[in-house]
Image (cartoon, rainbow, N blue to C red; front, side, top):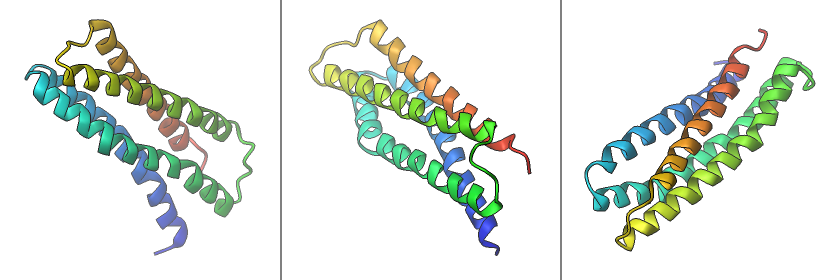
Length: 147
């Protein structure tokens, strides 16, 4: 198999896994919310301890493999679609950090038998949706690049 094809696959798979993972976690937390505080706290703990760090590693691989792809294909790094997608990466990490902090606070409140406010739950959904939109934007820019 050609090394360029392997690199394209290794760049595409983390992007797809990130989008599907964020969608799956939105659904899992939303469904666990109706099952009670113990189940919800358990889901939030797993999300904060396992999933979000894995998502961070996957997101951190995107600029590395993206640079390598553009280097192997001979494209200059100054192309507009590439610059915009690179500019969206810090935004992705900021929203991820805000989501992590919000979910951690929510988990702490559930552990101390307190109900999370509707505002805090709304912010958790907001950060997750914004994270998903940024991921979709980065993926759309990467998919729309000239061949």
